[in-house]
Image (tube, rainbow, N blue to C red):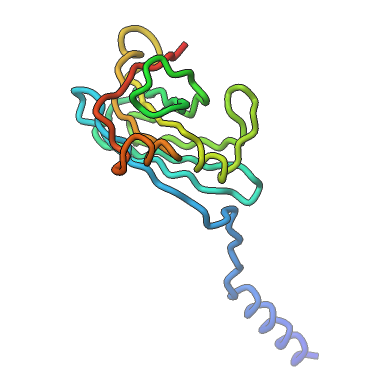
Length: 169
């Protein structure tokens, strides 16, 4: 009887020591785009889009040059960064001034149209990060970058000469 109990305890201890398998919520598809300085503020960063297994898209922005407790609005616009008055296709979670980070999970644009990872990578669009959501700061684009087909459509390097103001209402 004692041997049986000891064997059961050993099996139980060995089972507890085995590493549990971590199952990723991502497919492995991801793409990162540069966000270039777009004003007199020395701000830049990257945005990475990752495809989730549930069909949603996880977007994470990491900025350098931001600080304080501000929340910097992030817009996904159709068209490249030079388009003036471009409509907002998606309001993303703001960049936190303290961490320089924003995280958004989505599978629909503002007009309720469904978008998946493959469609997003083929979208002619851009990301713009603003100084504020109201007042004079709403027209200050701190950083911007083309995504999807706008990266190669503007020019082979994906960078364009100027950043157009957006329609942020």
